[in-house]
Amino acid sequence: MARQTDEAPDERSTRRVSDALRHESTGSPLGWLRRAELWLLVDAHRWAVVGLLAAAVFATVVVAVVLAPPSAREYLVGGTSIAKGYVELQTIDVTVITIVLSINQLVLSPELGTVGQQRSRLDDVLDNRTETQELADAPSAPNDPAQYLQLLVAATRRRAEQLRETVAEHGDATVRRDVDRSVDEVVRKADRVAASLENREFGTVELVGAAMHFTTAEEMRAMRDLRRRHEASLSADGAAAFDRLLEVLKLYTVAREYFRALYVQWEFINFSRAILYLGLPAVVVAHLSIGFIGSKAFSGTLLGLPTLFLYETASFTVVLVPVIVVISYAARLSMLAKAGIFVSPFSPEREGGHWEE
Image 1 (tube, rainbow, N blue to C red):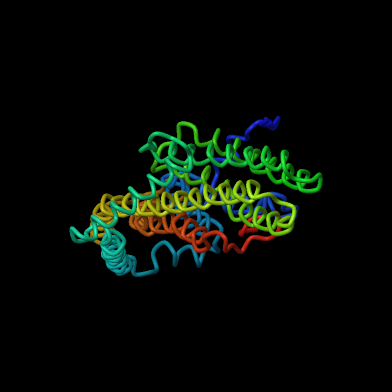
Image 2: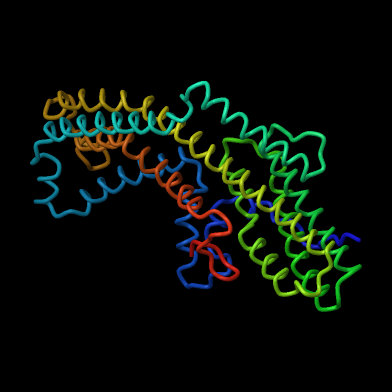
């Protein structure tokens, strides 16, 4: 008989990628700083991060001038060759745009394969869907990634309960106790992840975060260890129940990593498009600033600071926006890529924890 868990799913924690990347029980005094760092790198909306970093650049320059000694302030405001600096910034922006577009072609090149390659990719996907339908006892597999993962999570839960029932009929007391403990853990995680996957759309980091919270490496290792430890006491039906559960866990792992890889490609497309949209305005602002800086167009003061300096700081921030966009998106993409380096059963996880402190 299936046992229902009493623990309510924590939807917020199971949709955040940062919670899947860090050790949830970390008690370090600086643990809040690590949580804030991961939230900024992964969870926060990328445009919010771009805005935050741009504001930080502007505020840092202004505060540096306000707090600087008078001689240093005079040098910062009018003693440098600012126009020459904008020429260099133009070059940086053009270089950033060129590099991002080059990498974009590299990332998207697998999508431009021959007919044979495209047919092979389609066959692989169809074979995987057929295997999913068989393991999940479903007439068809959903096309929506979130629903597809939910189907596999439900199949995992069902196979875990079948293992419990099979061992209850044929196993001894020690086997039943160990299996109950492991199955309870699988059911608890499956319920949380299934609830968190509800109504998630592909292309959002929340879907990736929810999927990553099902730590199949831990579950597969636990089930293999459990089967090996009690192999002599297991019946043929019990051993087969272990195999069926491991098969669906492996299939979920493949689907999770596949959708994570697709999301990285999806996000890189958004990243490239953002650079295209913002790169040209940044170059134009840099070019116009070359002519404005040093002229009499900005005279007087505002809030005690030279208007020319405030314009120079604002235009400098705008020109840096393409670089800030690169930093914002590269932070998330690199973290997600790092999370996918190890595929189950290989994992750098600590006992009971995650790969990232």
